[in-house]
Length: 337
Image (cartoon, rainbow, N blue to C red; front, side):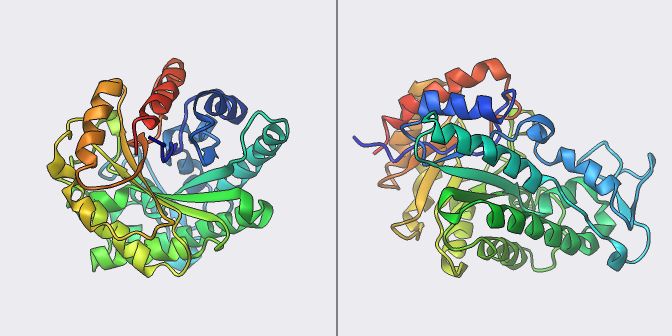
């Protein structure tokens, strides 16, 4: 059977972007349509590195006593009116453009295949939830979203559209929708979809756009185990219907224990266009190829065709395990229809 391919969610805990590009090309180059830079260095622990951004932002203050839930680190709060909050550069554009130079050089040298450069960005709700006090999250979020869209514009202005892919990493939203995390959004599902649609439509139409729908992997576990794919499908369908531009791909997690058709059954209602790629995060190191075979068989009871991925990025994994994990992707990709 012909593989639909491999999707790399984002983080890869290797030394730098060049090391990531070379490793990906060597192990799964024939299966990927786009390549991440690995979110290396300070970006390796998702949005925790944005704490330095909040620390230097006018209009925000913190102290060692004022701590919020979800994190033992102090939260930032408004020092005065929300209108005084002014975020400067967030660092995502700078990182992307530095990696783009390396990507372009390696592709010109034939090290990388003819693939797109993938930039994975967190939705603004994620750093707001992590770094801002609960009482001020709603007030601070618009300023951070403006700053994130400015980062996106810098990226899309500098990198040719036909060589770029943007992924919005969507995790905190599912914690809220599942009732695990408190929310500052009054009409929660509508508010989440409004935000995700706005972020997607901000990506130029010729740039590939995707969403990584995520249930987290802190401590190697989801913040809650999804009962099935119903909520994921509902969000994916809403995005496909609401976006005013093409949707390139959707990535959905698959817990390691879900080898049953019931988990995948809602995929029968998935209403994506023929051009939108579906990736299932069914690759798990713990049970390797045998476990992936079981999850693929169960998924085929509800979906005719899909590519494969891990549930989340590799960022919290020991670097020495990355080559084996990439090789596992290649082996599993051969099994998919």
